[in-house]
Length: 460
Image 1 (spheres, rainbow, N blue to C red):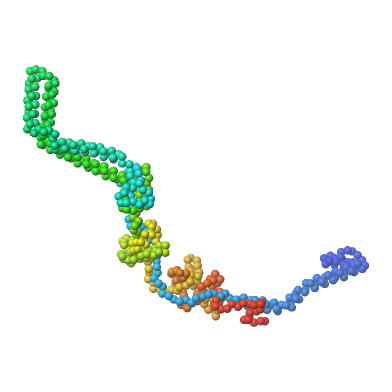
Image 2 (image 1 turned 60 degrees about the vertical axis):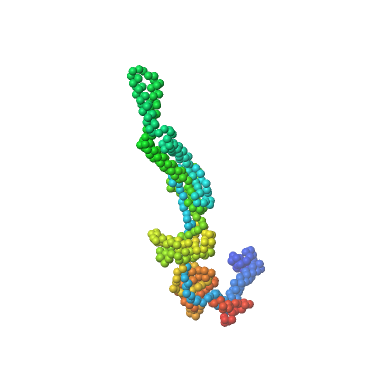
């Protein structure tokens, strides 16, 4: 009985749900039988899955093989087109041009001064000769007034010489002077003998002096000299007046032609220096297009030749009116001036806007037109297309690099290692990679129905 008790305890220690209660007799034997039964159940539970797996292994292998074969047969369908070679049309090169008015001018004052008035603003329409701005001219006006006063006095003196006020002749004046001198001599003799009154002496002297001045005025030679002097003085005064008038006029900035003010850099109170730009004016009824072209392109142009000008999807033609004779050392370009042929269309232009000048270039190569969707963007600005070629009797994706010549209307003209008749993938480029086996989209795709194997896969 102790032996059975020991076996029961060992079963309990093994953790197989045996009772650990120490007992003897029938209770110990019962515990031992229970422990053995639990061990048999455990062993049977472990071996049963392995037996079932071994029995079912052929069927599982068949299913795995079928799925692998189905995946191999489900290739991606791609849509392709057949390449057809076309002659490359004339290449249209675009050059950026600048719209400029036919006439524009930077206005400035001729002399320095303080700005008194500005009569216009940016955008103001002005007429030729209209005063636009004015300097403070008060000092020059005062100087002009003084010169005019001097001129008036000189002219009056000259008029008095040309038309003497006295009505006496020259002989009468000489006789009168001789009489006065005789009286003066007599008075001097009387002075020696007696003392004449001071009043009489002064009166005689004044009469004598006045008579001498009158005879001197009547003297032809002396009169002519005075007339000459006054004439020179009047001429000088008139010259000074002209200078003052020019100075006053220089205090104004006037419009050199009818146009529009496009810029203003001064306000009343500003102090300006001669030659400093204060206003900008432009003639807005006519424009020219200035464009810089490569020297080799400009050399092919002639005066009068017409080139397309494009702005905002509107195209007009411009006539070459000038070709700059020198080449810019920095950009190696020459300036070409175009005059729009359609003046009404040119009215939509605005000075300072950019336009495209189109220049056609003849091409002698052949290329291929492809949908834009057939192009794949590569690194470093390169482009590529995907071809479908037969490799080992299987349609396989092959990549070819191309050069894009022109793009328009969802099509691209390309050059590259391409031949007529090749198949180019035009859709779904993101789903394929070079070396991938594909099928043409027109082929029917194999599908599984009701979890059955495909017909082309033989059943095992």
